[in-house]
Amino acid sequence: MAIENSTITADHIRLRPLNEEDMILKVKWYNDPAVRKTLVVDEIFELDKTINWFHSLSANDYRADFMVESLDGVPIGITGLIDIDRRNKTAQCYCVIGEKDFWGKGLGTEIHSVLFQWGFETLGIDKIWAHIRTNNPAIFRVVEKLGFQIEGTLRQDAIVDGQRIDLYHIGLLRSEFLPAHIHYEVK
Image (tube, rainbow, N blue to C red):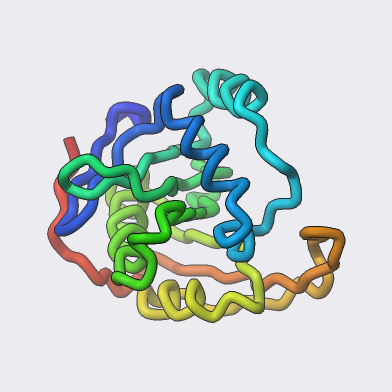
């Protein structure tokens, strides 16, 4: 199954492939100060550069980027697997819930769960990893429910808003995965 053609539907959300029109929301969300507090990014996003970045991905087979929508089509955020290494069967994950009305509703767990289940089953990934901020307990609670382990602390590893921050390197083996949402469908 081609990565760019996968749409994943779960209990409350749908993951569909990103498109150029989604870049407006990506820029809005990634530049929102409240959202940025959860991210490991320092740049301010510009629409033309973000659209150029999106077009540069067209021949890329080591990423799977999705728009997260409610089942009635309301955009919620962006998620995906990047740095997909088919030889070692690993991938890095990310998730940004940009619409604050959807914060605190348990959707982060569902988004991650179906993304990981799809990555393990469809892409044959054996390990998913991420770098997360040590001062973001909400995201750690989400990924911990799914079986992630802290594999190490990357001390003062990134500069965000002019400050050096620590990051956790977290990992999830296929054998440790605890799916939170069993029902999902790929089309």
